[in-house]
Image 1: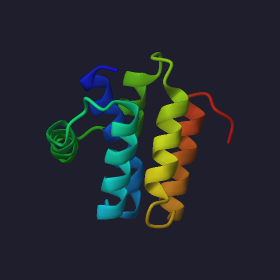
Image 2: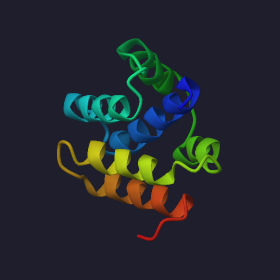
Image 3: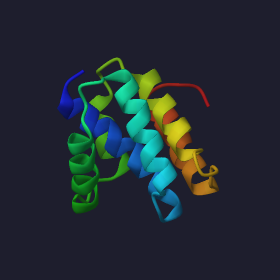
Image 4: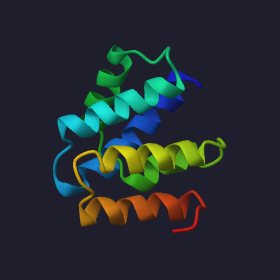
Length: 109
């Protein structure tokens, strides 16, 4: 998978995880570990840059999802969001964002 695509996927997970007001260290580690299990070429430097870029951007969850909607990676994106958001306990706002990911990517709730 291309680095640019993985960056967008990281930002989607960060968006879901951040809905409770903070992206915890456990959530960050979960995102990184899950991404690198999918693509071992995705380095910590790429990850950190994607997270930094996420905080500098003013994009919404829907904007990021639009970028991956037609790439056939829906299951992985949903899995990553589920695993990372629940790493420190799934807050209701994170759960709502996760359900939005599932709806937009065409998965059942």
